[in-house]
Length: 342
Ligand SMILES: Cc1nc2ccc(C(=O)NCC(C)C)cc2n2c(-c3cc(OC(C)(C)C)ccc3Cl)nnc12
Ligand SMILES: [Mg+2]
Ligand SMILES: [Zn+2]
Image (cartoon, rainbow, N blue to C red):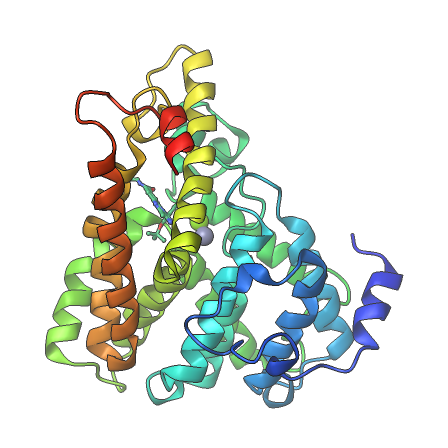
């Protein structure tokens, strides 16, 4: 629970304009992680307001404050999958809204659902993967492994639990049809943040990019929503080199902790989770080429203005290649040795 005082304190503040946080707050190059943990709830309010959602959906401001604070509290503090990640993800959704004319492609309810899903898409993440849930027979695996997307189903359950908490239902001014549609959209969007789901729809996304987006095609709306949240989820890698490198390190901190855990359970971790064997530059070059660059290349096919992110990501890939080259060929570079280099 969040205290009444916390909610009141946030609710009584006037919602500042985006420039209050930074004059570049709405630009692709802005790095949302510079906003302090304490200031993020107000920044989320600013984004809701600036996208016109509070007025359009008659959202009760006190409910919205309580919802934001409950979602923030719902995150744990693993090295990467914490509230700062969620805030960075929802900020990217906001800058796409401001720079890519999303309302030309998606309707208001879909955009609201996308933004709210960004906020809570990793809530209560434990810093371990879906396969670790299953291999370790975790409570979440017991609940969801038959349905797949174990972690994502949990993130969704937690989101719905908050919406069903007194004074947190930000959608309550909506009519039943819109209300149900918003929840269905949030469910679909959060479940589509499972890497396995993204890989499954890549072919369809490529076909859609070749055929061209058809606003009259509901299937295209769902595919685009998946692409957009995946773009938000990976957005740290579209920023300056120092940001991209620092966040990649955080992810490997989280992966190496899982690898240590797996070793202590007598199991062999994936290479990318084994701090004794992983070569971060090599792994990152692979991830950018196989997963991240295709995402933003597809995005740029629908939104030419997104081309700039592909270029920045290509530059970051070149930097990883230089890092790889800098390390003497002979050594098998371990995560630890790499830390000293990064
Ligand atoms: C910088 C960066 N490096 C990563 C390196 C590897 C992997 C990984 O999971 N490899 C597993 C093999 C089987 C491919 C993820 C990485 N990653 C993510 C990420 C993305 C996710 O899923 C979406 C968003 C749908 C792609 C889900 C979870 C995470 Cl941590 N975000 N940033 C990164
Ligand atoms: Mg996730
Ligand atoms: Zn995420």
